[in-house]
Image (cartoon, rainbow, N blue to C red; front, top):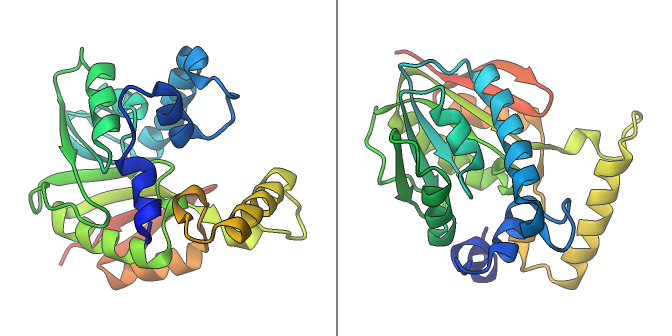
Length: 235
């Protein structure tokens, strides 16, 4: 997310290259031809979004910001619960894909943003922010700047729900072979090209993220696995 190369990983996606778009979104978990598994990907992302909707307790009166909306699979799920959804992404190609994906839903508004800035979104206009599989790619400085923006756009008492990559579980006494192998694989990527940060998971700690949130006007509410829920303090 820092170098020019890393920014281009998502910003410069070709809207006609569905394979690369899906791979950039979900990695290689569906093999080398993810476009042949579009229905499975859609279902998997919808289920993941449903977990966020439940933890954030999204209501039918809420305006929700979907930060890093990608192909719109999760956006569509959120829109079925919320009054209005603002889908934000840094990639024009993803936004165009998402518009097609969500074409039958009339309560979604799409906005292109730049990294760490949510300037298209009005101040105090949002009830909840959901960000799925985005903060796993952000370093602690990115997280700080996003939380500053969250404070601006949320109404008092508004909620933020993110997921993160837990550094405290790496090679711990309770082993997670999948997570540890992911780290080792990406350590190899970093050795070969340390500038290509967008392809890497950025490992953080819940404690560090809670501290950042607290310093920017948020109160920690609860944790569900690798998901963290915060509420904007009412002053």
